[in-house]
Each structure stands twice: as C-alpha cells, then as structure tokens.
Length: 257
Image 1: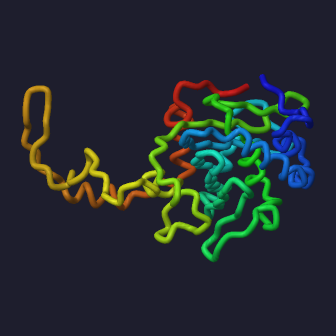
Image 2 (image 1 turned 90 degrees about the vertical axis):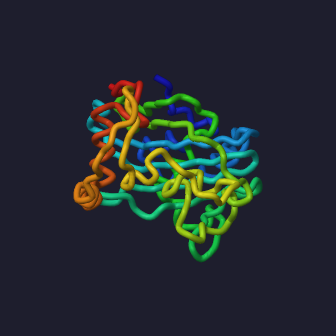
Image 3 (image 1 turned 90 degrees about the horizontal axis):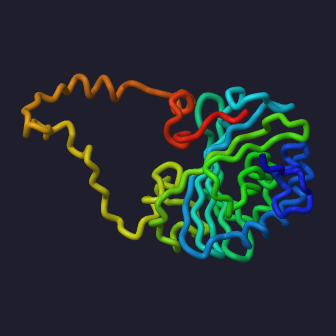
C-alpha cells in the first residue's frame, strides 16, 4: 500500500489531512496547487472521483467508510476545473467550483470569483482533500491509511469523455443555467448546443420493440410510467446500492482492508 506520510512530497497535504491537521494542510495549499499545475496533462482529460472517508481515528475496513463527496475534474494544461459535491445529510450539498487558469486557482460562485487562497473554502477539509488528489494518479482505486495502518479514505477514479468546450469549462463565471460537470456531465460544456438523443428518447410513445425474432407490438402502460416517476431514491441510497453490487465506480474492484 502506498504511503502518503511523506511531508516532502508535493501532495503532502493529504498526509496532513489524514493526520488530523487541517490547519497545517491549509498552510500547505500553495505548494499543493503548484504541484497540481505541474502534474496537469497537456491533452484534454476528464474524470470523476468518489471519496469514501473514515470517521476520526480511521476504520478497519472499507465497509466502515462513508461517502463524503463526488469530485468531477476537467483538465487541459495549464487549466483545470474541479467541482466538489459534498454529502450533506441524506443528499448532496451545494457544489463547490474551483477553476485554475494557469496563474492561480479561484473559487467560482454565483456572484463571481475570488482567489481560492483568500476564501473560506481554503480551510475546508473536503476541498483540501480534493485538491490533494494528484491529477497524474491513474489508479482506479487508492486507499489512504493512517500512521497506525487504519483506513483513512478510499478514492475511486472513473475516466470520463473529455469532449468539453475549454473556454466554457474554464470560465471564471458560474454556469448560467445551473449546469456543471456533476449536475449534467461534461456534455454541459460540449462544443455543440444540440440535444443528445439517447436510445431511451420517446420511450413512452413506442408501440413496438425490436426482439431477436423481429418486431413485437407493445402497449405502453402510462400509469406505470407515472408511478415510476414519483418514486424517489436518495443519492446515498443509490451509492449504497452501487457499493453493494460493486457497480459504477466500484466495478472490478474489491473492498479495501
């Protein structure tokens, strides 16, 4: 297991967070941001990270970790966009948007942007954890451990299509229509404004389907569609389902010990 307790490394911020020293981690922010910029890929890159964090003191197994945040990242050196969606109660809280323009990193809000280092988010443990996750890490899963060998966090990384419009994705203004990497995916920053037609488009209106034996007539049940649309599943319940079935970001991995 890779150790993160090496203060001399560029991403020692993670070690400080795991050691329970968020104030020291905040002081190390400048070095971490500089290291991030050096590690940015020159080609367009996008990925989604899932953070599972342990309670104070660490955990003995991954099943004891809790979903802490989803972090969507779009990169094209020297710029990048980081969207952090923390868990708040039974759902996700307001997304924190950080954009690096090659010279500095900024917190982007509905009212404008401000240098990240001068904002209150520079002290936020989840924001610091997201920034401390090195861009050039390519492992699908990383386990971070405390000095006594307990699990502090597990980070899952999923590659995403990098078909975003750079000038829009790296803008220092918030999305005008409430979009973003996490809410609508990278397609919200796509070059084309044309809607994407999926295989499910118009499903309510189909009266026949394709089968191995040819087309088969069907009678849509509109009441079933209404019933299904009224069902609600919380993001945390959905995540628990994915974890249990090792689906989504957890596919092809085993629980960390």
